[in-house]
Amino acid sequence: MHKMTLTGLVFKTSLLMLGITTHAIASPTPSASEIVNQCYYKYAGNDQRSNMQITLKAAGGKKQVSEYTRLWKHYGGENGVVDKVLLFTDTPLKDKGIAFMRWGHTGASNKATEQWIYLPELRKVRRITPRDPQTKEWIIKDEDLRLREPHEDTHTFIDEKSSNGKSFYRVNFTPNNDPIYSKRVFWFNKDGDECSLHKVDFYDKQGEKAKQQLIEWRREGKAWIWDHVAIEDTNSDAFIHYDMKQVEINVGLNDSLFTQRSMQKGYNQ
Image (cartoon, rainbow, N blue to C red; front, side, top):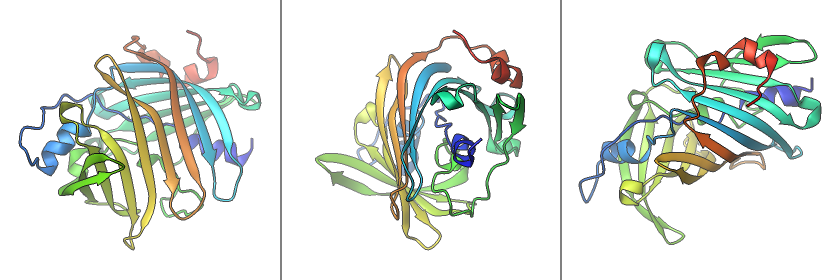
């Protein structure tokens, strides 16, 4: 298989949204903690079934478009598991049958993210080793997409800022231990109980902006769904875009789906 296909799949998990109930922002000038609790942690349902389109472009490379059937289930920290994701490749046809699975673990579990890929031509499931975070070949990292746990960063309120006619709270996330970024600046739209994450600016160890993430949301009942997510390198033309389609919430996905056996069998609704 082409190296680009294998590597690209590692970063196509998108999809780390925890279902955490929070309280509304009460004070006129909220604290960083209040903003993060209300605006960052959104209910995404207990599970999701959807179609996902990913548009990926490496620096100087050509744009690639792929489509997947995506299954996601939230575990809420049970047995140290945050969530599980399964992707089954639908297009391009040359890659149909390739499956990718990811298990996300809590920080308290002291377990790294586990990832597998199924290659039909080899009829074999392989474990994927996370890349060296210092590798500069790729700007998109799985780390950029997962929901961060409160204990991982120090949250500091920066200011209220207007941009394109909209008002935002800006909160600085300074990591307690991060080999890649010195900080992340989160932009939350000021929308009362409906506030949500709009943008994240990533800064490297030299304090320079390295990339940005933009998020568009939609509501499905009480659930918050990522409608479109764009992560773009600020120093090149590299990017990755995620578009979620035909999202179904709380469909009752069985735990047995998230296994290597399912990767080999494929998925039929």
